[in-house]
Image (cartoon, rainbow, N blue to C red):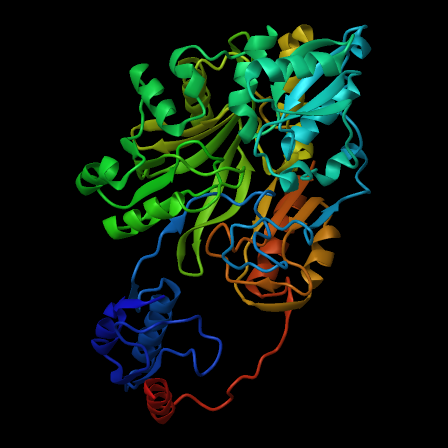
Length: 580
């Protein structure tokens, strides 16, 4: 990054063994990852009559390097969004360039074919005798929405896919590998008004009775609520503020009105609407669109200038789900662990299908890099707090029916909502085999379909997942510590041979480019591991992390490297060259 200050140089110069410092980096200059002579930020001569003291000082310098203590950089807006199957490989031609274009043509997806427990459902779901005469409407079925469609069809129901206006053709083709080929009874596009859309659906269904209208993705939330109400099937409705429950700002206002911990916030369509809030708020702050998907446009801004730039940028870029952002939300930055609670509800009865915790750590100079998503035991203290809080959130938002994907930060003062996504967890449903193994036979997918279509099956589901879990596993989000053009991927071959391997998805393949993982756009991919033996899972995860650390995931194209020794003369000549 761009150097703002060099506090590490001052510290090094005060070490007992310090003799001479020859820096090539200075305030206002750019520091890059050190890969050769040109990218080396300087050299330091150390000497001491006491060998142990010399060794101690050198170790301290290495520690400063490791924690990025040599330099203080000009801050950049930092993405807080987690990587998902929807975003791996963002960019064109398989590279990780900074583009808002989603190119899935070179996505590499590998699923284990030799795990018997992954084949088919683990629990047989029974349905009504006349399901073949009944129709289900799924609005904008993509990613996990396709998995839900498959589950509905497996029970004998016909499915109409309803596409909302402006939904991209590319996203319509976003079908998870686990779904194979997917087909619908019919596909209908939203009409000019709700009445026209309803008539088109009835006409398409013909003699088949429409028994449910289910959300298939973030973009379909609002239409699902309005349409299910019009079709007179199980619905969350659109009464009052609930009509805007997808709006992140409205969510916080509703839970605040219910007497629950909420985020300090302000929203607006113009900078003047939020300027006074930002001037009074402690930085960093979070900026995001009020009505887009959780992985879309969420940034951590460190000062008011960054916030202003990102505020205006959000109105210029197209949202991942299609359309343009209409309002920007500015919120306090919550400190604490981030959790996910996946739920399914029927007539106000809420059941927790799974709990997860995000594994976030510093890496490659970034403070927040996602390393994975881990299951949380339902009998733990944090789980009890989170489950109780999430049920109150669902009630406050009027979410009586269907799936919910709740993101919560467990702060020092207790749980606080980040956002409630009024649909199933995304990520192509790649987590489903793991979730079913953890519970012994069901996931949020089955629970959500039960909630709409099978009263008895839903009633038989436990209120919370069993504890201890029936298996072990997690999602491992891959991190790259190197960058370059990829000419080989030997790490993928090793990963798919791991005993606990379930699924691998990545946007980095031969012919593409990998960058140091620092945010959403530079995430490599995701691996699902699962096994009945905890030791096997731990061993395999350690193997993956070792490959990352040793840069064994990829073979990178070699570039010409300067082999000369680092010297003061070299630095001077490099500086002169840059000046010229």
